[in-house]
Amino acid sequence: MIDVGAGTGAVSQAASPRLGPTGSVLAVDLASEMLAQLRHRLDGHTPPPIMTAVMDAGFLGVRSSTFDVALSGIALQSMPDPQAAVSEMCRVLRQGAHSERRCPPDGGGRKTAMAVARRAS
Ligand SMILES: C[S@@+](CC[C@H](N)C(=O)[O-])C[C@H]1O[C@@H](n2cnc3c(N)ncnc32)[C@H](O)[C@@H]1O
Image (cartoon, rainbow, N blue to C red; front, side, top):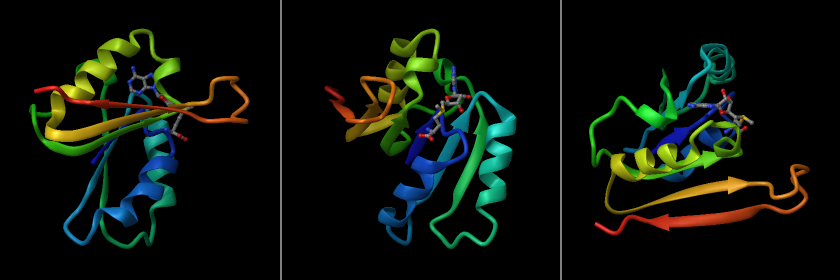
């Protein structure tokens, strides 16, 4: 799984226990200090492992068709080109995988809007 705009890792930590014993998470963010906080929070975290990498969501430095799941929580709206990030999320997904973006529509998080994009090919 890849967590795009992972920040301090709330999405990665919530999702990782559901990935099974062979699963793993790559948590990426533009801000190295956010990922440093994530790693600090992970001290003592049990597998599946969560790895971190500083990356721009618009130019993910990973090979195409690598992941089964791509998530981005409350991050696309803070990116200058969210469409580029969604395109990259689709590129790195294997065929048949799915991506999910969650954004609070009112900025207050009262209700969560969920958009699910399935890769067409
Ligand atoms: C509001 S935080 C959300 C963090 C986490 N996903 C969560 O749900 O708690 C948004 C994150 O997006 C990151 N971000 C913004 N633009 C980015 C970009 N172009 N590429 C990667 N990460 C980016 C920020 O550094 C920040 O950590």
